[in-house]
Image 1: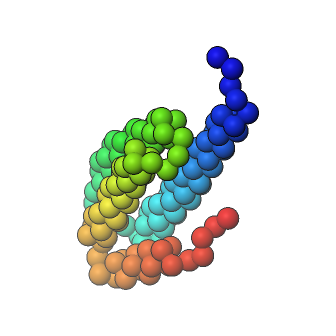
Image 2: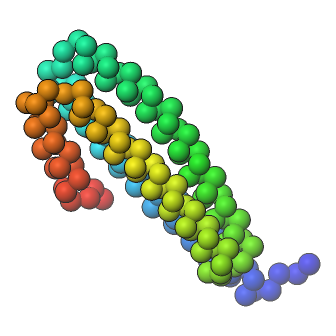
Amino acid sequence: MKLSPLYVLALLILAILAGSIGAVATNHWLNEESDRAGLHAFVHEELQLTAEQDARLEALEAQFAIEKRRLELSLQAANAGLAAAMDDEHRYGPKVGTAIDAVHERMGDLQKATVRHVFDMRALLNARQQEAFDRQVGSALTSEPRE
């Protein structure tokens, strides 16, 4: 089967688009990961946790790591569905739209789980620690995005 130049161009554009989506998503998740690591470090290093708080926080972190991995795999599967839909339709058709919605839903699930985890962490803190924690979270959420 001979591929027409138009078909090759369409495949090239599709590959570039898929790569761009992957790069943006990766950058988003890496920045989010470093923000959470920063918050985790802040809690451990700046809030002077008691031994009990530290142990409970470590248990929360272990539980969240499992849930986070499950959600990341779900997001990865949704991205694979988007790639398949793009390959099938070669345009922004109904399958691509549905697949994009699925990706956004999985991203939302991950974000919601992360926010629940932040509140679970906050619940372990005393009032003074919560004030500092709230300032740190607010600052992280409102600061300029990193390049």
